[in-house]
Image (cartoon, rainbow, N blue to C red; front, side, top):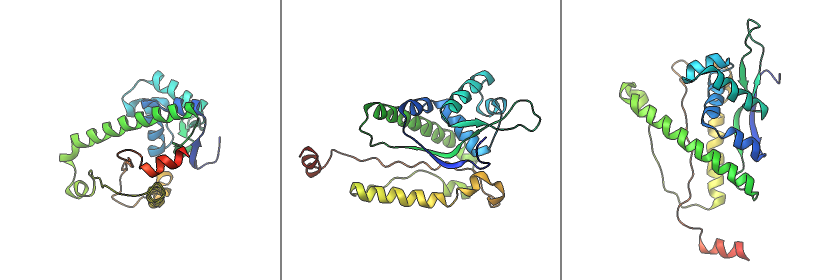
Length: 203
């Protein structure tokens, strides 16, 4: 077993590990372990409306590549699983074709998962309290920025969200009335690459 509190982040540099992670159920399993803490394959299957053998198989695959690990159980029988880190990251700017293919694959899976979560929220939105309907929702903004400025914006958002990291592992630090919220972040450049950048890259 590793440290009692999982590391904050795991940066994946092996395309094989990234492809192994790029599976809808595996990503849901890791999200579940990060959000609710250690649990057995049986408990995970019940929460995800899946079957135990399937969840067990995918948890073992996640462990093989360092995303999950076993921890001691309370009764010494089925040992729970936990996520090894709070976050997983990777570089989208690799020149390695295998890594580019792997990042495209995992990003595609993530978009599909985000869309499903948004649709799930819309299905129950009418039953949400007014204060939560007002605080949550969808939005977008069009910016005209350089790549460096976009990186700076992303870094500022990451730093803001990191202020709430300690509440993930320690329920005692969650204020009354708090609940899990999925915060989706996308920065999607539009149009082609500006001409001056194209000519500079080709020189």
